[in-house]
Length: 232
Image 1 (cartoon, rainbow, N blue to C red):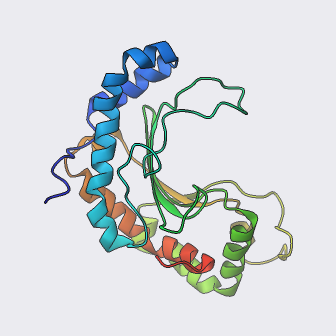
Image 2 (image 1 turned 90 degrees about the horizontal axis):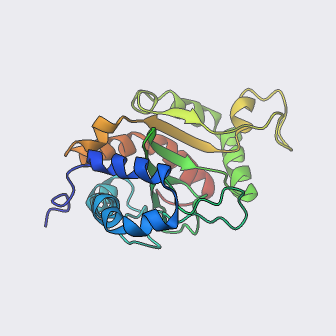
Image 3 (image 1 turned 135 degrees about the horizontal axis):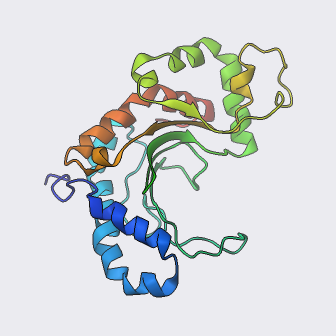
């Protein structure tokens, strides 16, 4: 069976729905339009995830594409408002994360697709890793500086991604302030992003496009996985 057969791109109505939701972020509107959400957003997202199962088996076999409404690769549309001043109940984006089979949360290395009306991008890496994982990555950079630098200048990676995320203002504890890679050691996130436009995700070949983008991230992802002692 061709796993791509049900995915033909994230059509314009996906963005239209998310834009309308951002303007009507309340339970009565969503309840009234839930059938639209199911057809126009949820179904294409799950079809995309299904279609990515085969590419990930080649690119990074320990990362999973799980097409489930909950507890899979698709992030919940419902916001956790318990500790937030913003009480709007719904996320106004599609968030899809392909996690490592050993992962328990979103902080471990992963491959990510974000679709919002004004913000569409592919992201890779680890966002806000816990302190023990962050220390391992920093120590791996110190131990293998040439490997880290050569990965960053890899043309295939460099042409598609930009390193992003927040940094500490000073050197992290236990690392010299004058280390030649201190700017990288200050990172709190080890992520890279590639911005996309709506036209790209609407094309029927977006699965192939996604696969090429994720494959280009292999050197970066392998460095992080090696640092954390997990297989790519």
